[in-house]
Image (tube, rainbow, N blue to C red):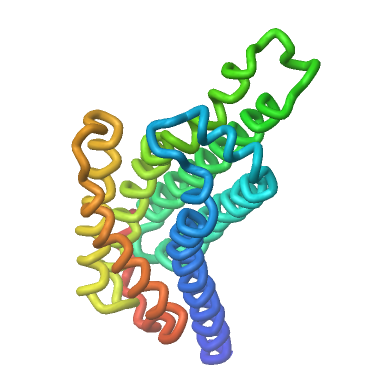
Length: 239
């Protein structure tokens, strides 16, 4: 009976790990493809009004980007849940903190999507916002796209914090090679620094700090999807 229970738990654990692998890869390639295939086609660098005019001329494309970003924000929450379920036996309190931070990241991302929808409605409005000039209506959408890095640096603060926690928990476990976990800690410390610099000193370009996180999410996503996690679960430290 105990053997069967253990086998069922291990099988469930592996399914969660594979789902985590899938969401890692989706959350990695989704925003990248979104930027190159959609957002970059709407953005006119240093010209907010020209960007808004492009949005008007390619409204369906902009709406598609909004829909994809909403799906990706849900993906962040799914990833947070899978990582919590995987790591709660290592340290439940830390895993819960990581989960809460990941949920905050996903919620903030969803709020940014809502703001984009509202901005588009203002841009498309007639009677409702007749008090506003055409330029005032165009400004919000153009600002959102042209300030993409600055706006998304807010959820990236939470991304850095929650993934440092989960990478640390993976390091304490025997689930994945420790080298991957160490890369995760380094990568998301870099993301945290990048986000802080983007907020405090946007004139300083530190985009290279995002490269380690790309490598980590690619490696751990493929690893969890193809190999899952080791079934050796260390004793919890009771916290």
